[in-house]
Structure formats: C-alpha cells, structure tokens
Image 1 (cartoon, one colour):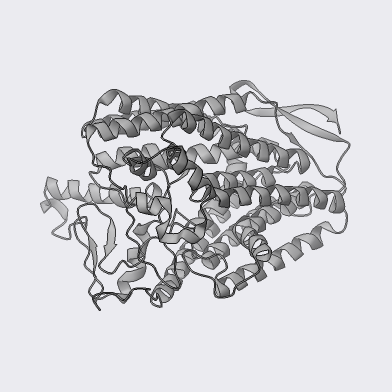
Image 2 (cartoon, rainbow, N blue to C red; image 1 turned 90 degrees about the vertical axis):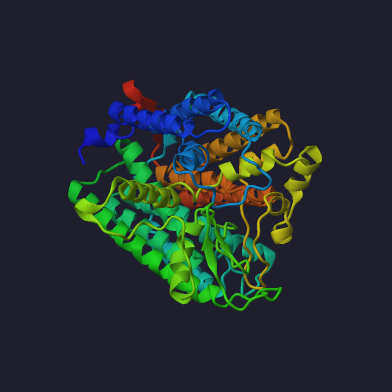
Length: 551
C-alpha cells in the first residue's frame, strides 16, 4: 500500500461521500414501508450519516471508533434493512406491536442516543492528542516475555476448550474459585490479545520483530480464541484491532507493510477465519447434541421452522442463539451447524429459488434472488449486533421506572432465563442443565429501563466518558498504540453487549488492573526514551509528528 493510500483511506472524501450516499439511499428506501411519521426516521438517517462520517474521520479514540461502528450496525443498519427486506428481527422484541405510536417512541429514543454520541465524539476530538512512548533500549527480558505470553495463551485456550470456563452458552465442566475464574475468563476473552499486541509492538519498535509477524501472531490468536470460546465473532473482533491500527494510524507506526505483505496477511486471515468457522460449527454440533433439558420435551422429534418473521424457533426450545458471551454469534449460523444432524429439518420462506436459471428466469425470480442475497448478507454483517431489538422491547414495556433500573444494576447473571430482560423481551429459550442461552438488551435498552430519556442521554455519555478515560489511561501508562487499539475494541464490545451491568463493572475493574500490570511490565522489560512523540492533527485530519516533550 502506498503511504498516501494508507494515510487517507478512511478520511478520503470520495469514500465519505459514498458512505453518506448509501446511508441516504437506505434511509429513503426504508421510508417507503415505514409505518409511522417520517420526520423521526429521516432525522435518524441524518444522525446516522453524521456518525458514519465521524467514524471515518476518527483519529482520536479506538474505543469510540468501535463503539460507534457497533451501534450504527446494531441500530440504524438493522432498522433500515428491516423495512427494506420486509423481515422481522432474529431476537425477541417483547410486546412491541409495530404500531405508529410504538415506532415513534423507539425512534425518539434512538435519535436521542445518536445525538448524545455525536456530542460525545465531538468533545473527544477536541481533547489533547495522545502521546506514544517509544522504546529504544529493550532489556533482554522482552523477547522471552513474548514467548512466555504465547505459551500462556496456548495453555489457557486449550484448557478453556476442554473445560469450557468461558464458552458460548456452555456451563463450565470444572469449577474454579471465583477470583481465579475472574482472572482466567478475562485473559481468555481479551487479556491474551492485549498482552500479545503490547509485547509484540514493543519488539517491532526496537526492530526485533517484523510488523507482518505481529499481524500473524494476533490473527492466529484470534482464530484459536474463536474455536476455544465457540464464538464465530471473536476472531473478527480480535483481528479488527491490528487492521484498524494500520488503516487509520499507519503514519504513527515505526514501519509499514508492502503490498505483497498485505496480500499474505489477507490470505492467512481468510484461511484461518474459514477454518475457525468450520471448527466452531463442528464443536457446536457435538456440544448441542449433548444438551440436557431440565424439562423433558413434549415431542421426541425436533423440527426447525423459519416462518414469516425469519426467526429460528424450535418446537422444543432448542438453543439456537447464545448471546451470553458473544452476541455477534447470531442465529444465522446455527442452521448450518444443526442441518447435518437433523434430517427432518425444514427451512422455508426465504429459501432462494432453485428453478430454471439463465435467459428463461423471469424478473420475479431475479428479484427474489437479490432479496435473498441481501437478506443473508444482512444476517452476516448486521443482525449479529446488539441494539435495536432491546430498544423496541423496552419502549413497549409498561412497567419501566427507576425501581426497575436500580434492580437491573445489581441483577446477577445467575438469574438466567428468569432475568429482567429475558421476561421483558418474551425470550423463549428453554432451560438446560449444561447450557445457558439468553438474548441481550444492550446499553440503550438498560438505560431505558428508567423510563427517562434524560437518563438515556446522561448514562450513555457516562459510558462514553468511562471508556475514553480508560483508553487514555492506557496510553499514558503504556504508550503503545496496539495496546490502545485492543483495549478500545474490548471496551466497545463489552459496552455494546451489556446484559448485567455489574458484570461490565467487574470487567472495567479487571481492565484497569491489567493496565497497571502492563505499566509495571513496561518498567521492567523496557527502557523508554527520555522524550515522547506527541501526535498533532494536520490539515485534513491526518496526524503528523509534532514536537518533543520531556518525560
């Protein structure tokens, strides 16, 4: 890749114009079938366009980059595709009745949330630039520390695969003491990635490792973590961090990648992603076959129906989606897992026509083909993200208020299928002895428990502030751009998939402690320069090197 292409990829005005055009066209297309008043929907499209533009111009925070991206997909994109493709949501939406009044309430909440995010992002962009601490005199411990981290990662992921400490929906087969479980689960989900990225880039800085090699390490870690956790999403999230670092901040890196190196990286990424999907699917097929319902099913046969609402439902409540750990593992992939084992499986409604192709196929078949392709694409890219369904379920619930909100803050995950949102959304997941399956509300829905739109705006701003401060603390103490990126994606993802707020609070505490540990590691295994390079924005939003400040 050329330097010009790298530096201006996301900030390119043609890319931004194209993205804004897509947002405008999609919003107008959705308006054709939108049942409520159009101004709130059009305003939502305008706010979504501004958020997209903010993401493409974002050079200030990895946390906000990923948070805005996830919420745009989970709220606006899911909304417009719902009306364009005339499909229902794959997750339950409670008593939402699709009336104009219900949609007006939902759009008001979404527009307040989007406006709040825009204000927060505008403020973050005006904060002082983040400093990068360069390493030029590494101690001999640095490379052995990386090898030790790789071995620790392999060991933890192997044990997790065997004992399911942190595996999608699966109850652990080996119980650990609480404090040990907290540490192990954090390392499996995010700690390994953050540690490898941090140590690896320090070695890149001192020219003891190629940047391409660091990419391979993180890509492999993402693939193995996905298999270990039984999550299709985990590799995407782990790989996103180094890719965004390079595409958005390539000028800040000590070295760059050539076109041939990029080709090899993309090839390896694609191969490992396909391999992880196959292995996760095979493991799920075997695991789900061993599911033990607490209540015996009424019928021995299992029938999977895909009706008008496109939501996978089992006649015995078979767990088709697990959003406890990885909401990005949506139900669209489960049919592929279950199909080989269920010869009686019937999938209808949206199956693509298999009739005559070529010059004889009529316009209706062509439209159905394109619609089916768009539907599958939406399930792959959009439906997996948490957001809109939670808002719809909560705004249509009659008993919201401060008491409900306070109860949700202290609710424990042990509530399982009897948790507040599971009952509010009318989730129909059956209780199993060795699996736990739930749908996830997300931060917007939980803040709406209060029934107060001011709480929605204030709470969202507080979450944004907490994530931004945690990222900047990591930058101040560690000064490693790969640390910032991995912490940013972890924080954004954990905020978006909020189900039990107390769990997110524990994660934040763990993360802060881990940042302090990385700071101590830097002091032990590296010797920083006596100065830091401060990055100041140049014309067009592209960062350029500024002056030197004394440590």
